[in-house]
Length: 250
Image 1: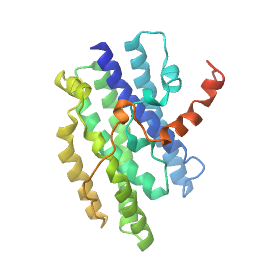
Image 2: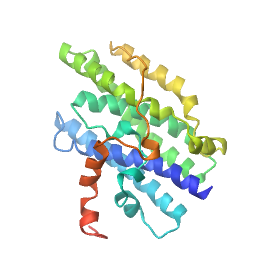
Image 3: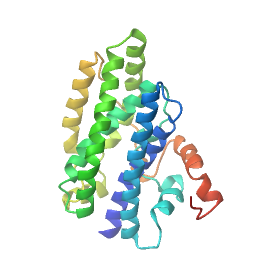
Image 4: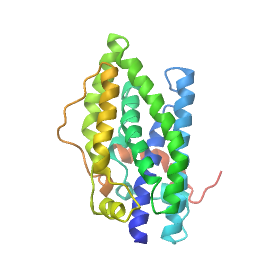
């Protein structure tokens, strides 16, 4: 069970790390100063969560790797984040659509993890859910502002949801690892979360005068280490220092 729990923790950690890395790319490029600061702080929240998860993963692994080595010294096929999170930022509408869909899902995951039989995961969820609640509110406000704003803002945010929707089915996939963790009371039954997530997302889109995209084919494979070409470019930037100067410390 130790190996299965380690793999499960990596999925959570990789989601937080890659999402945080993407958001950090907005630092210095935000549409207004307040948003530049807000997204930078949000990125730090996710990277902080990833750090705590990687520390726990290192303890479970017991091979003298620390959180930095796990985060920075793996190849792309050893990352298990959702493909949704590695997609390029695009314009601000796309970033906010991605942030909204993911954090709505992540909040529900953390809500269930507060009852995990694993004491670390339970405590982690209770702390992290406070941060993610703010992330949901922040992205929701932007969806409403853009959807019910100008003709251009409405078109941009609708296009963002239309293009990103095909990445959402992966969030609810239950493979053998997910099923095992759920059955043992450690992880989350993702399928059970889908109706709640869907209804909450649709309610916000409706309020924003947006149309919920139709369900169709969805991307898959991130949880098994099969990614889009974009992850490799993220890792090239993120891992450069540790690859060039192994063991380097600030």
